[in-house]
Amino acid sequence: MRTYRELFATAEFTALFGTVSAQVAAATLSGTALGTLVFAATGSPLLAALSLFGSSFAQVVGAATVLSAADRLPPRATLTGLAVFTALTTALLTVPGLPIAAAFVVVLAQGLVNSVGGGVRYGLLAEILPPGGYLLGRSLLNMSVGASQIAGFALGGVFVAAVSPRGALLAGAGMSLVAAVVARFGLSARPARAAGRVSVRETWRGNRALWSSPARRAVYLGLWIPNGLIVGCEALFIPYAPTGASVLFVTAALGMLAGDALAGRYLPASRRRALTVPALVLLALPYLAFAAHPPLWLAAGVAAVASAGYCASLLLQDRLVELTPPALLGQALGLHSSGMLTMQAVGATLAGAVAQLVSPGTAMAVMASASLLVTAGLGVALARVDRRDHHPAGDPLGRAADRSPAGR
Image (cartoon, rainbow, N blue to C red; front, side, top):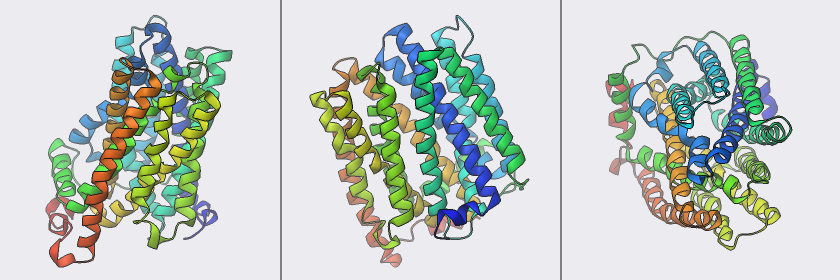
C-alpha cells in the first residue's frame, strides 16, 4: 500500500477518517471557544492554557487505570460512545453562569473518558489496513488532524466573533454528534482484540510489559517530551495575540499537515530513523524567534515552519508499531496518546506559569530551549537503541517482556 487513493479504497478507513476528522474539528473549535471564555473571565494566561489542554491531565489517570479497555472493548461501540459523551459534556459547558471550577471538572472528565480513544482508533487502524500500511494510513490521519484543526480554529474564530463563545461550544458539540453517527454507521462491528475484563490490574500488567523494553522507552520519551514542551508554546498563542490567535493556530496546523504529508508519502523508509532527531530540532528551534516578539505575520510563518517538525511523531510511531506485539498494540498506541496528551498539558501549564512572570513571547523561547536540550539527550538514547538493533544479541529489545502473559 503506497498511495492515499489505495487507503480510501478501504471502506472502513474512509469511515475512520471521517470520525477522526469530525472529532478533531469539534475539539479545536470547542477549545478555542472555552479558552476565549476563560481568558476573558480571568485574564490569566495560565488558566487559558489549562482550559485548552487541561483535559490531558486526566489522560495519565486513564493510562494507569482503564487503558486496557483499548484492546478489550469493541471498537465501533467504543468510538460511538466516546463521541456522544464528548458532545453532551461540551454542551454542558454552555450553561450560563457555570463557575470556572465546574468547567474544569467537565474538562477533566472528558480527558479521563477519552483516554481510551487513541488506543481504540489507532489499534483499529492497524486492523483495517494490511501489513505495512500503518505509516501511510497514520500519516493521512495526521494530515486530517491538521486540516480539521485548521477548520476548527477558523470556525472557532468565526463563531466567537460573529455569534459567541457559547455558540461555538454548541457547534463543537454538534460536530461530536456527527462523529458518533459516522462511527456507528460507517465502521463494522468488530470484536475486541483481546479477551479478558477491563481492569486496573490488566492495565498495569500491559504497561509494565510495554515499558520493559529499552527501545520502547526511548521511543515513548521521544514521542512525549519534545511534543509536550512545544505544545506549551502553542498554548500561549491567545495571550501572545488575543485578537489574532486563530491565525497562529491555523498556520501551525498547516505546517503540521505539510510535514506529515512529506514524511508519510515521500520519505523513504531507509531515511526515517536518521531524520527523526532533526525533525525534533525543527519542531523547537524556530520558536526561539518569539523572544524578539515578532509581528503577527512573521510569528505565523515561524509557527508554520516549526510545526512541520511534528512529523517526528509519525516516524517514532512507526518504530513503536514495529516493536509491539499485536495483542498489546491498542494499549501501546493508547499509552503513546495518553502520555503525549498528558505531557502537552504539563507543557501548557509550565508555559502558562512562565508567562505569568515574563512576556508570552519570552516564555515560548524558554519552552523551545528546554525542548532542544531534551532532544539532545534523546538523540543519544535513540542512537544507542539503533546500535542495539544492529546487534540484537546484546539487547533483546524487550522481547522477553513480549512473551509475558500480557504480551501474548
